[in-house]
Image (tube, rainbow, N blue to C red; front, top):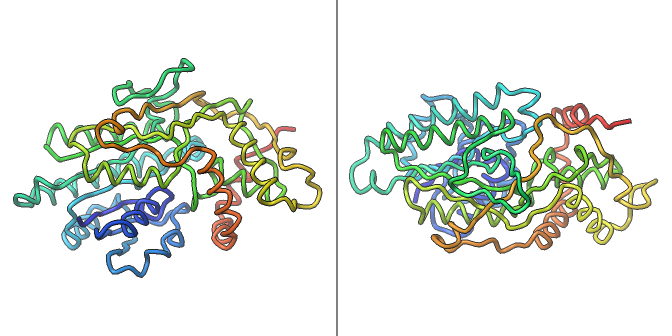
Length: 357
C-alpha cells in the first residue's frame, strides 16, 4: 500500500509510521504541519528509508492537499493530525476548531475528489481511516460501565467536542458520498517520544528535575492506558483488515487513577534512577495537588471486545511492562528530551500548572 499519514510527526502518528516502515513493505507519506508537538526527531529511525517521505503541509490547505494526493497517489489515508491537549483547548479553543474540524473537512474533500477519480479496483480498495479518541463519549457514570462503539457521544471539553465533530463528518462522508471510511476511538496513549505536556512524560521529567508533580483535584480521575506501540499495531490492523463504515474501539485494559499512575512512576524512578536531585528524599514527596480543570471527566474505560473478536487484536503490554519501558526510554534519551523542553512548551507548562499554596 501507499499510505498517506496526517500528523505523522506527532506522538501516535510517528509510532504508526515507525511500525509500518519497520514491519511492512508499504510506502508512507508523512503530512504534518509541524506545530509545537510535531517532532521529526521521533522519526530518525525511518528518515533515510526510501519508502518514507515527508511533506510539511497544513491539512487546512486544500490546494496543497490536492497536489499531494495527485503526486503520491495513496491507496489509504490514516488521519491522525489533530490538536489533542484538553488543557490547551480550554485556554485556546480556536486552534482545535480549525485543525480538528475544518482540517478534517478539507482532508475529506481532497480524499473524495481523488477517490472519485480512481478506477476499479483502486477505488474499491481505497480507505480513509480516521483516528479519534474515547473522550468523545464523555464521562462514565458507573464504576463498571465501558465505552462501546455504540455509546452516545457526550463530549465535555472543546477538544473532545472538536473530535466528536470530526467523527461525525467522517461518517457523513461515508453515508452521503460513499467514501470508504473507518473510525477508531482509542483510550489514553503513553510510551516513548511522548511530548511532555501529557501526564506520564510530564511527571517523569519533572521528578528528575526536582519539580512539583502537579495532580489535578484529588487525583482520582480514572483512565484506561494504552501503550502507543500496541495502538500502532491496532491501527495498522484496522486499516488493513477493518470493514468500511465500521467503528472500532481500541483500549489497553488498564484502568488507573491519575494519582496511582504518578505513584507508579515514582516507584519506578526510585529503582531506575535512585540518585535523586539535591533536596529530594523520595520522588513521591514532589506530588502536589492543584486546582482541578473545568469540566474534568472522572472516568473513561474502553470495551475493546469488537476489535479482539473481529480483527484478532489484543494489547501485548500490561500497564506495568509498558510504563517500565516508557520510564527507561526517557532516562536513556535525554538529548531528545532536551530538544523538546524549550521555548513555548516550557512557558506554557509554567503558566498552566500554577501550584496551589
